[in-house]
Length: 519
Image: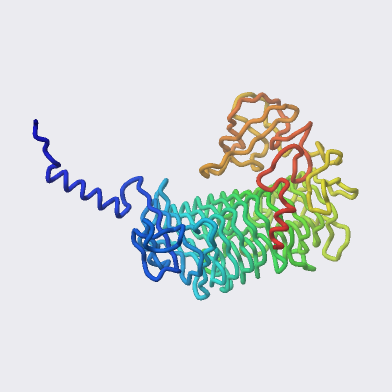
């Protein structure tokens, strides 16, 4: 029989090295699941039983405290926090990698609570590809500070009871990009709840509930190309949302004319504090440039709806914003407010195709809109309804239009073609109504439809300087033909909801979302 040799000394060394790397979790594609269990008497290495929540009968590894658990993380690892109270800060010492994020999450079905009254709940500086999921942050100094980061995902978390005032108490993103804040709740902050600041660009804020803040629920400051979608905003103490440049307040820089191309769609603004002044407690205090606000519902906002506000220094540049196809119902202190300003800085803000009903001025009178300079805030095709617009369920705050509504198929087309043509390159009079996904991974451009044609096409790219849309499907068009987001029937509807379509995550969900806030 031929003698079979065993592994050489060099091969044995390689195998030993691989074994060490596996144990450390640093081989490409290798990912560990670790645990933190505050009920343990001490750390449990290789013997933890997650189902029984005890050491000795299992094969997993668990640490007793949060800091130790975070210190051993490697890219691709998931660390699960068991139910209990954690008196520390979520501060991952390393980054993940694309495709191998570091994940810090709640054990399924359990509710770990981070409580740290003298510090913020989350701190990250120059980190990337980190996911925080299912955790609760209660009675913390501030919700979190995420600076110079990218690809941070916060999902299904709960934030309540921040103690620090000013921007320090918020969940604040500064100079951070491609982050996502999804399906989380923010309640009862001493000042602001969520801030995107200082070139925090191309982030997504979606599916969240914001309820109660000493200042604003959310603020977008000198940041660009962000998407804020399908959230519910309620603030009986103050205002809801603000969009401004930065004027050096707190740790923000002085950066003016620097808040561009942000999209706010399919949100519900359901309550703000009462005021007798048009500028104090708006649903949106609106500065910024090239902003799109569409498909939102504003209702029961006692301090006014959307205010194109002008004042030194953070709200000087207010131009080329587009507010279209929204529904304003039962707001006080006006549904839409337009200030005035320097004509080179405050101009071309268009309010189009919105449905307004039962809104009042600050004294309770019947005026629904207040515009100081009609050349700077331009109204077009809005319905200032006096008779019942026939909502599906007005008392239940369902602002969809019934089939018999006089506003079905009565909307204006938001722009028109610049000349006759065909193909996939379409030049329009104003491309500022549309988005192409802003270069955010996973985001698609708008679906558009020409007047009198059943076919639609998706926008792949926009050249805003030439107002040229690149489409995924060839179309034919005549000069001056109307163009809108895809619609049903013979023309777009007026207001936030197009009959027969689901619009973002908000369609049909407003009553449920309001009930969730009241719990």
